[in-house]
Length: 524
Image 1: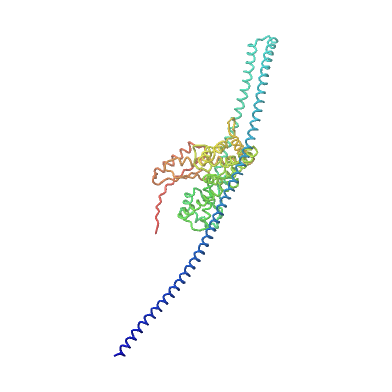
Image 2: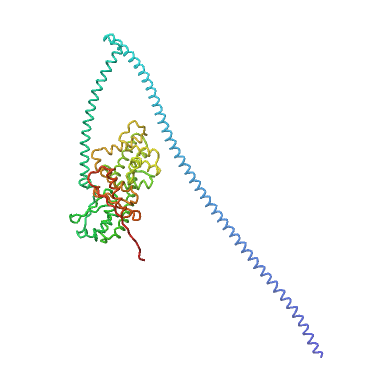
């Protein structure tokens, strides 16, 4: 029993010692862990501080780089602005110098005008003195004549008046003889003109060369394909283009006849395409002609643009450029109108340069003075007036308008015009009147054919008309819904009557009115 108590006591003592030892060990381990944690925390804090310092340095570098780039950008902008200011300053200096030079010139001219005015006043004074002296001498001479002749002044005047009347009668008789002679000569010239008109209407010589285009065929069988079944191909081609197709016995050749050069060029290219393609029927003909017409429109603009560039002009409206291109296909009294206009522009520019005038205005007016020729079917005004209206409409200056209006005046007379207008008119006359420049009869021929078309187009219901066979025939296309069959006959009679009343053409003119109805559908 005592042993048991001893054992229990020993166990209690052992447990106490174990608890104390465990508590001591645990306390020691906790302190070590705390120390380690503190060391780890200090390491983390040191690393964070080091990273923060490094990040701060990087951001400072980035900020410095950004500020450096911005400063360089500002410096470049400032330099560019400075250079612009310098350039503007130089330009202003040049303009100022030019203005000073012009002011000097004006002052010099003003001084010259003042000197001229003084000289004129001095001469006027001298003339007045001489006139007074002359009157005195005349009176003295009359007094002496009265003394010598024994006649009074009134009697001498009467005798002198009778002498003047006798001289006037003789002069009048001479003028009457001259007028009679001129009348006979004019009658001869009129007769010659009528003969020339008859020759022209045969479509030979010069007119044939300028109003007919020759198309070569691969073989004579192609003529039949061009004509088509019952002539439907050739009728469609002529109605679409307004150009007459002449097919004769000449081997492998057909001719296109028409006075309008643009239409004839379209017809020529279209027929060459049809021959090359081989497919010739009404639908294909209309398609090719329309496509060719679009191609010619593009070429027309190119021709006008090339003329403007060759003369070194800028800022001309594109519609005027297009009209200039059309002039390449027109002739005026045998001259190509576009070449004539370019020649006038060059001459006017050279003359203006010699006179220290505005060469740009002179060239523009010289180039544009015939643009009205490109407008078809106009009757209300002359070519000069139409050209002036066109350049005004498309933004050309008043100086150019005035010069264009005056360009075709053969005699300026006492009309007050600007120096540029006189220069352009002079250049135009030089270009026209040089030897071999014009063929007046061709111009008259073209005007007569234009007149025929204008007469036909003046009737209600007429869509378009074409003068063919050198003016011996005019074909008139009418609207199907506006003109019936009976109306077509009446229209042909009315057109023929108006042609007889308004033209002086000799011979017979055939009027053909075409009324056609077409139905079109598409298979999808």
